[in-house]
Length: 456
Image (cartoon, rainbow, N blue to C red; front, side, top):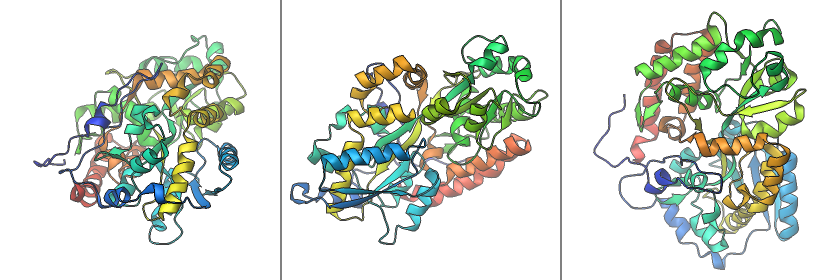
């Protein structure tokens, strides 16, 4: 277990308190830890010294993305719109990886070179590491210069990137996990046209759903892997009254956490398995190989387009002690080592990407959340909700069930991958949760002591 010291490790007030009604949208911000003392970081001081009014934006910038939600064409359209409005700046879109982790690994590898981009994907489990390594700049001053109307960001989503009084990224492709179900299979099984309210209810439906499926399948298809397994398991561990950590103190050895581990093991390895492992659960769901799945809200548009049957969407099921849905997805950050000219051009592009019209366009094209309050109930999004009510489910779940993630997953470098290692032992091999969690806890503690504690 981690041991607390007398130093201040409480979350910043803004990040912890960012609970705001935004039309139909309100959610709890990710509670970022604060450092002892009030001095800003070295990179924050450097950025504050720039007089942005005297800077001429660069004529070319590079954007590294993994095109979340299969959004490459959408991102290319956003670039075209920006370049039409700002013909003095051209944007080069680079596919820097297939997922958040691959982009992050490439960014880390390029940190000591001149190959860094002007703007980079900064996911929920990577942006804090970028900051600890002084690799990204705070956005507050340059956004103020640009009059970026940061008060219009959904407070909790912008607050997710606040550390020590400054914001180190801006929300872009923000999401939660969502429960998807095949309405045709549900109807054939005689089930109500809704998602299960609890995991226990889903298990009780297994016998009715199984005849609708291939013999070697199960009602629920689930994928595993980094940036994913430990995300959806948050719902299950919370649903059993547990959590990954109490601030920096690991709690994987508590009865509640072990009970959640037993639950997920039984989900895949019980007498009548409810779930099966899918290499790509959204593909299996769209093709009818499984009757339901948990996928990112960012996959919503792709699933609706690919599905051969009508798609239903629902909140994540509750466990015996409730549950909740974790916020997630990615923001965008600007490297601290770029020239002020390039940083200003990147900030202008970032401001454009996240304005009301563009975030509404990105949301309706993918399923990710609108990141501005003015977009949530805009005419564009209201029309989307009317045509495809599945989008409304995603927004409502964010308002009703969102919960900030446990610290060790999002703030300890490498902890997401370590948690995934333990969960995959349980899901793929049926390992006893006490053994699996016991094996990974020392690794998380080491990652914390080496990569976080010295900076607190």
